[in-house]
Every structure is written in C-alpha cells, then in structure tokens.
Image (cartoon, rainbow, N blue to C red; front, side, top):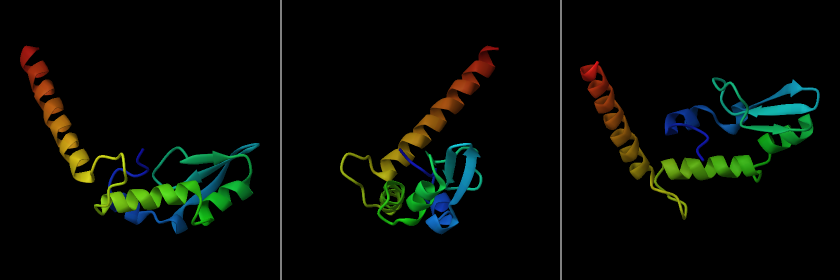
Length: 107
C-alpha cells in the first residue's frame, strides 16, 4: 500500500506537517496530507494519534520511511520496483486511452 501517489507528494508532507484532528466523540484522525479528505489512520484517543505521529518507530512513520526509500530506488522484499510500477501505470493509461477512443468511434 502506498501512502502517497508520487515522491513529490511524499517530500512535501514530512511527519512534522501531519495533523491530528478530532473526528468524533472517541475518534481522532491522523492526516498525512492536507489535501486528503480522509485520515491515514484513526485512533481512540488524541494521545495515541499524537504518539503515532511523533514516534519515529511507529508503524506509520516506518511505513512512510520505507516508501521514501522505495521511491529512491531501494526496493523492499516482496515489492515491485518503482520503475516497474511506473511502467505499469503508463501501460494502463495507454490502454484506457485506446479503449476510450474505441468507444467514441463506435458511438
């Protein structure tokens, strides 16, 4: 799972910018990007949400660091390389464009 769509978005949202926001009576959200409508994680207490944001060894911080390394070319075991994922994204975009053109031609 990727927290950010590209390395630029990840670089623009370091953990220091993450926000903890009350979502309900017993729900606190950890927002990792100001443009996201939904929190990356939710917690029962504000203290738990703040700890997840501030602790460098928290699950979320470690996952984002692993993702940063992946974008930089260090591929974790079991992951596809970032280059492979970009190539697949480009193939999918070309396929979708071709399908859209075929649908327009058939109409």
